[in-house]
Image 1 (cartoon, rainbow, N blue to C red):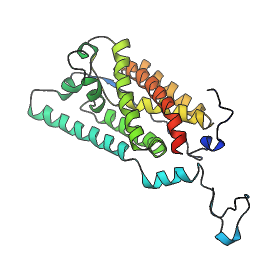
Image 2 (image 1 turned 90 degrees about the horizontal axis):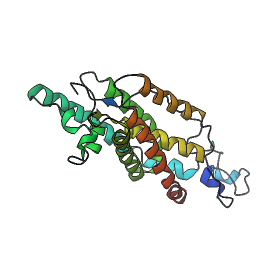
Image 3 (image 1 turned 180 degrees about the vertical axis):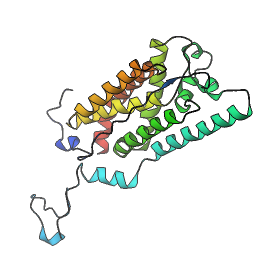
Image 4 (image 1 turned 135 degrees about the vertical axis):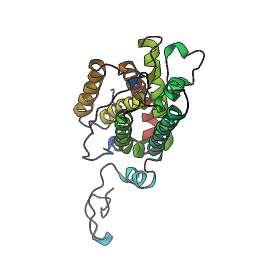
Length: 253
């Protein structure tokens, strides 16, 4: 990434401190039959008139205010929606002859006739085991906790939604026409791509996130029934979207 020689040094303050990068594994499934520190003087020395010196807040006061005030409402809303949809999947499966995964899942052959499936597929998960849902939601929670306080709610929503669509585009261009896919993994891989871009921008050690991406991409290639195409598409789109957010992120800071 090219650096601007006129860039404000505060633009690259580390917003995460020493928090480690989480490393869960998960997959997007191909659908089966069941679907300035306190107490500091401007000179940099401690000002005794302002009371005891407080520990330095990594990432600057603006980041700290967003952590306390904004939280992660978008991440929690997406998690709640996915859990609710999974409950409805069980209700439909138990009371009707229909499978909600077949109704809301995405297949490239349906792109022209039912394009809305490119988005709805990201909120449906495999049955009957909850493992697919739990791994995706746990990962969304971990990365939402790191990204949403930094981006703000609407940027987080845009990033996730476009990454889900990017996952569907990956299936469209790289998958088989009749391959039906479900799951939020395209959107979560978009968070992977965004975190890589932001860590590189803030000059953090990118090795952990690179290893995480490589392991999870390999997992998709080596384990059957996982749509690696959605992972690749979501990763690429998430990284591209986060690049467009950097100028606004600097302005917001």
